[in-house]
Length: 357
Image 1 (cartoon, rainbow, N blue to C red):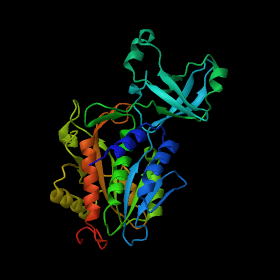
Image 2 (cartoon, rainbow, N blue to C red):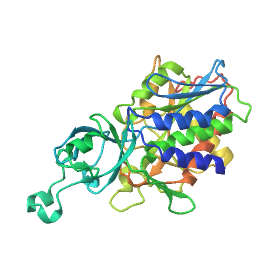
Image 3 (cartoon, rainbow, N blue to C red):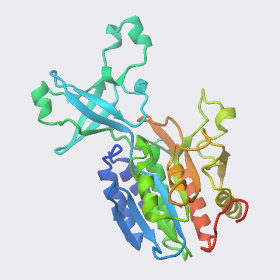
Image 4 (tube, rainbow, N blue to C red):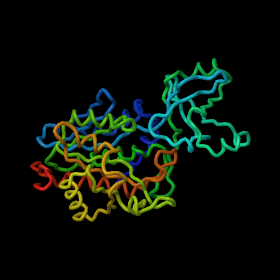
């Protein structure tokens, strides 16, 4: 079970701001939380946090969850004191007008709001068109360019405004659940494993720059050199109107963590996870995923060095890549239990070779 201290850590992690390439706030909180449980902990040159149990064990198991978030970056300051910006990661421009943001500056967080011409002043064609980011701006309430330049610099990262809240006893709402919820899952699994006698080494890696091309997972996995790995990310909940279950599977909030059968998932490792689920009566939901391969840290880790046995565990998520994502803590607990019981079952002699192991 997730205790009160762990839930407080989740809230603190979700209340950080750090778009891809600027994950400083979440990295510090992650290090501070994991340090008491780790035999070794460090942050690498990209910003990945790597906490380890049994670092000298022959068999090493890697856990990965990215704690970067989508966001923006200041491009220029206009004469009116308004700020032009670009996206960092995949963002739907339809969700942006009127959205609160925080610009991360040397002087601290500067609040702002994304602006657009009012609907009353738009032409009929403009009302029908999807807004372009270059036609939007950030308003920080500055009187002019000079006033804005005293607060903001070109290149400053911009995050969605912090907004953590519990919508029910189990449903959490926040920006950047993709994928701080996954980073939380592996941290909680690591904490629980630190209290158990395990026969393998475990590297818990909070990764960076996933939204820009799985960059942290590439370097993190190369450094850890694992024999097997589980990555935790968010997946698409299909229990809302407009998403066809026949295309993505019947995935609902609270139904358990999502497991996938596709090229990213090593069959012997997936079978090991399924056996742990059956033995310990852990709920889960099965799907093929929305693509045959790629899109998460799993694919990058799998292709590291001579190859790694990998599996992806996903937390069902509503409204992905918006400031209003929703996940269910029951699915989080399912994911933690699947990881803990799978790793606890290992002898360290497994090879995970398909068709043999």
